[in-house]
Image (cartoon, rainbow, N blue to C red; front, top):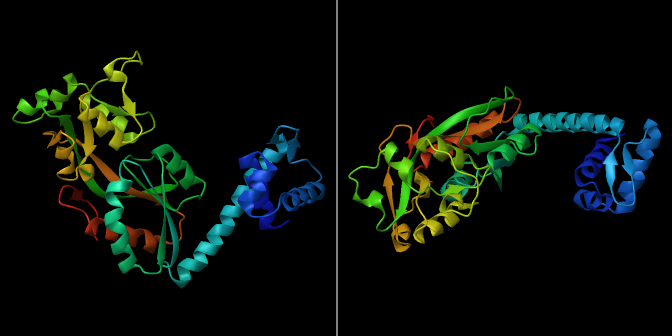
Length: 307
């Protein structure tokens, strides 16, 4: 048994298909299938139950695959420790970022990071919070930029900056007549939200102290999977929405017929943190990334990390 055998097991368990697993492992299907069959013969148990339509782990196979994941994680840690000893700032750093932050922050970070850490290769992925946290736990990524706290004792968080919320509304909206937009003013407006799974949706609901009724075809049931879609709905006059400060990018909002204003409430903000595993051996790389981020923030946010 070797690490490659364990990789094959995990690939089949995830893909539930020998052909797709072989493709993911960059080998032919006969090679992968034959190796797994030899491993089952060596172990004396069937790891997978095979039918004409599906492949699924047997009960004992599920336990074997669980230990295979742990073994691969330990092997990665050994490689990581060696890498950290040689040069913690060299090599790939797999970073996950939530969709309401990535397109507005990362373009201003990538070039300075390359200049500051030329041997580091940032590997970006963009997914919702729940998915990123799970990928951190399973060692699929090394760190994540999140806007919510985690209660996992295996994960550590470096608070980077506070990002205020702005309210975006169409021309002629009643909010335009107010001298200041207060938290209470948002309770009576048609608030457009992102779909379930986005932390910004939950934060908007918490700030506005309201709930969204079940879908009935009314205006309140309009939701979107991106801020760009929300803004197009705002421009079309369907309501207003909350925007993180980094997403407020100058005159292009006005060109869409949208106005954006700050909210006079201390709670109208989110804290962006860099989350990683306590066991991650390249702590210097994490702090180098944190430093580059806070040194390249605009003045619309409040830095929390000392670079």
